Length: 89
Image (tube, rainbow, N blue to C red; front, side, top):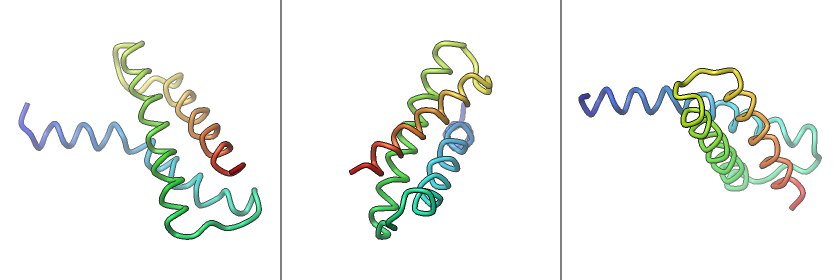
């Protein structure tokens, strides 16, 4: 596999976790109360991305393939839990 193909696969694998992580960080001030600064929002997005990527990686390892709905559900739960823990602080 060429390096650009590998990069394309990795970006497409992490795209759902990135989208959910950023959207969750953007929506949380409307639900939770105070609005964090830009660096706080960037930190929340990064931690949500990491939690979602770990869940997607675990789903890939467990099922042996990408794109299972159970993996996406686990990603949503992990991102929601990480956002809830970050918002409490």
